[in-house]
Structures are given as C-alpha cells and as structure tokens.
Length: 278
Image: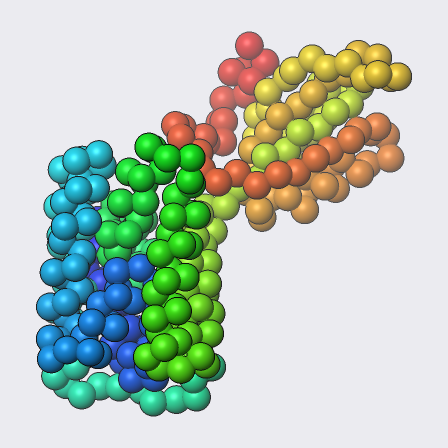
C-alpha cells in the first residue's frame, strides 16, 4: 500500500504541475521550479530535466536518510517524470485564470507531494540537501529552502514577468501548507494541560466520557499553593467535549491547549479501567 500511494501521489503531483501550472507559466519552488526554467530555456522536456537535476541531490541526501528513502524517492521521481511526459504528449492542459491556476494547481501539487512525503518518499532534492547543510551551519532547513526559492522566484520574475513570480510565490505557499496538512492535519491532535485541585475527579470524568487516560504531575502556584497538573493528548474532535467537562460549575480548573506535530509510539484509548487506577 505504501508504494501504491507513492505512485498515486506522483500522478496527482504531475497532473497539478503539467496540466495546470506549467501552461500558465507558474513555477513551484525548489528543484522542480529550476527544472521548469531550464525546460523553458532549452529543448529538453521537463520530465527529463526533473530527474537529471534531482538525482545528485537525492543521492547525497540518501547517505543520511537511508537506503529505503533512496528507493522510495527514486520510485516517486520516476513515476512523477513519466506522468509529466504522458500528460505533455496527450496535450492535456488547463488554461484558466492565473489566480485559479495558482490556487488549484498548488492544492493538487501539494496533495501529491504530501502523499509521497507521508509514505517515505520525496519529489524535491532541495529538502534533502537543506537538511545536510543545516547540520553544519547555524541556518535552519526552512531558511535554506527559503533562500533557494527566493533566487528561483527572482529568476521567474525576469523570465516570465513580475506577476508570474508573485503567482509562483503564492503557489509555493499553498503547496507547502497542503503538504503540511496531508502529513499532520488528518491526524492532528492536541496536548492539554489542566491545573486544578480536583485532579482525580476531572481525570475520572475524562476517562468515563472520552476513554482517555491522563498523566498526573505535581505543581505549585505562587499564591494558590500545591496543585495537580493533568496532561492528556486528544484529537481535535474530542476537544469540545473536554471543554464542557472543564467548564462544569463544580470544577475549578485552568486549562491550556497546544498543537502536537507528531506522536511517536503507541497512543491509544485504554479499554481496561484497572490499568488506569494502578
């Protein structure tokens, strides 16, 4: 299933790029954006340029990210390039308003790239090299990628006009947000900390209502003295129910909510109440 999703992601990304963005002269960021520029200035097709330019970056990055990353990325890029060529030869293109092309092309490209990243592959070698550079410099991965993309979009402005450069920048922003949502949004969870004097009662209420266990910690307020701090991880859908529990009149509690980007390990609802009380 993982490899099927890599292929599906490659097809979706190729459709968004070749059918919607390229006909409107709108670029993506990274090596894909460079590939579009090179393909426009030369006779080489985009499908070939994408593979050739990405290959060195991916090979360098695979030394740090492992052999399986190399295999999955190679599958993704080959399928991506293959379907770019298929869509080009079928003369499938959607010439629409540039703003519509920017929005929907960015969403579709981001959905495809997000599926690939979620399943352990990659479409753009810029990120792998940025990871390596960030380990040896004070720059973050995001700063390195942003610097590269600024240069790419400046080049787009010179070649296609300032409006296309701005559309390309908007496409990059939309694509990155969709990629983030594909990788974290579907499983997005919230970390909740509850500070109270009634830790046991609230914990019992959370367990009986949501089936979630909590972690007890000791705290001390500057004025209020000793407190119980409850820590719990829940889904977005469970948050309204938890709010109702905390807002009950007979509870005196203070709650903070924060996003959780990733959970490593097992995080499931307990089905054996005895474990909770042990």
